[in-house]
Length: 393
Ligand SMILES: *Cc1c(COP(=O)(O)O)cnc(C)c1O
Image (tube, rainbow, N blue to C red; front, side, top):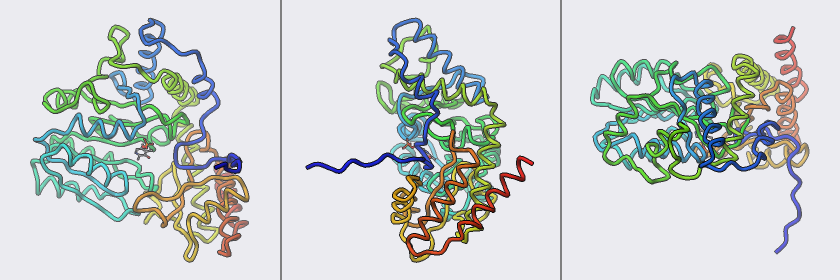
């Protein structure tokens, strides 16, 4: 059977994987390093230290040779033991999903779940510790991407620390796009990757791991080794003096180093500012156009993804298809529990530029209109331009 050729998109404004920076793609085309060669071993060490600098973390970053979803599962397998009571915080699909991985390893789980357009209330975390002082691990997703909402990880981290629990943070789609680092939130394991806000590719993960978390893994008799789910296997691999347990993802490491260089060279504060500005222009434009934001309150709306409620009577997939067909612009659907309820505009990495808010609003509004819905596209564009103009005035 033969298929008609499919035209590639003109502009990709998804919530990850994102359009990569050209310098990342160029770096990935470098000749393949051999993992026993001293030049590659030195480059790997430099990359682990570079990641640590971006994370503002004192120890070399742990690099895992797989996409972040694998590394998050590996974190569950490696850290959580049969003695642990896990407090899982679920404000969305990723938070809820971590509980299922946790269930394979923990003694017991306490879960706080809120509607997926809401954020976790730190007081509920405090109450959970009061009721269950035996909670030993707290797990939280900073930006639950399928909802486009942010959890207050700094407050949550402080409470976890006060209660002597380890904190596991999924910061895959927030780190690099806003001001968050492992030490800010007292994280013991803080997972992120280059495929979202850093404008890299999704095939590798880098992690900050605290000494307490390493101790916990070493003491966990079921923490895997010689396994794709092992964090311990790669603990010392950052050092040029230590052999790799398996072949690292050589091209992805080059891409990761390039993505971190772009981030540090531009200046993190500047990068966060353009993410926040693009998101604000999107939110203003979306509401001026007559659409509703998904987030219950604007304070919890992510600066890296804008989630928009699907207008009544219209289908999410039809809107996405129309935006692609008419304009070549790709937006994201919801996922899992948010599928069918919202649409997402990603502004991560190189698409965190205010002009893309104008593009997204035009494509989204144009698609809604083409399907017979109501969208005041010109009001949306004007509102976005106002935000951009005020910021640059
Ligand atoms: C993208 C993302 C991940 C990683 O998922 P992959 O399937 O590996 O891309 C994990 N957590 C969150 C919150 C994400 O947005």
